[in-house]
Length: 455
Image 1: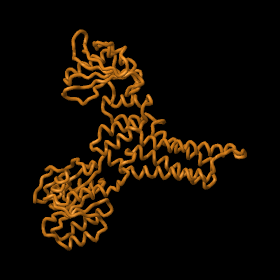
Image 2: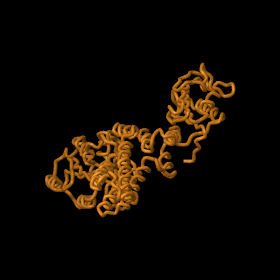
Image 3: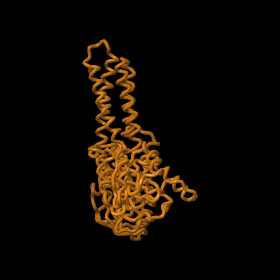
Image 4: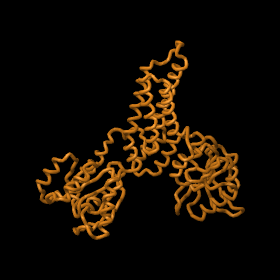
């Protein structure tokens, strides 16, 4: 992120577009002075105490731009840790643009995406994990995703990792003392106890990795692909799960020739649902492309709903699909239970080592049970109440730290204490990168590049 902390930055902090009110935010050493240049009220902004709310008007030269509310935040008791001013203006596009122009003409610079939160991070108000939580809060589409992001912003995950790091620092100190002063009778921690402590930390880090899938799904959603041969009811099931008619339903095979996707929520879990073309051998080039896309999406799915018509006997296409998808996470949805059921089909599926559910995509019967099976297949358990890593960056750093701790334990058993200390130091360094105490600009660009302007 190419920024200068010496600049005073300004941006619209509310969404673009016409609205009743909008908030324009400034932050930096000259925020009060620049704001005072265009604001006239009963109080002088430059002398106003922290969290003052002042009614007044903003001007460009002698022309009134709007009647506004100005809120003063003095450092360090502000979002960024710098002096800040927020103007609440009327939500007219011309007013917003005029006020922003007046502020930039008086010395403010337009903020880059995420620059306010970047300054909050640089000024030590939050760590990097908490900064990432801000984006997750903004992008949360379900209550559970929001709750998870709020826990991360509060520091639950940071505290958990910081405790691991503190313990590693202690282990590092004890091992270094044993190496540097082997003949002196120092009261150092016995090596057996160090091994036990390292094993406890390894277990904790393993738990974090195991919950990565859950954190990722909470924040980024579960990808579920509905698959099956033509005319088994995929589009009907798609519409049932969405609760609306998005896909065209027809008795003609090949009606769905391209993928349709939409987002829904199942028991608090965000799900991106895909309706795919029926998988079969076709000659029409449009249908061929649809089947090709369907197969590609199947390889990227977190979960596959394989739809089978329970009112008919299984045929070659059904068996081929079952064999093709057997290694992937899958639930078999036995559709058309409202019709006469083929007992041979039911018996065969019942003997497969795969979760299944009988439904009617036409009437909606069994859909609630199917939704529960989708959520239960994730194996989320009680981990929803814990602080979880959710980004690939988190996963890589935890894996790196964990690898070092495992190596350190191995070195202790082999009696190579110097190498064990080096591995502990590597584990600490990975946690420093995760928390943002040791960062490079590429990581910051990746994190704050996901923000919107004004946050």
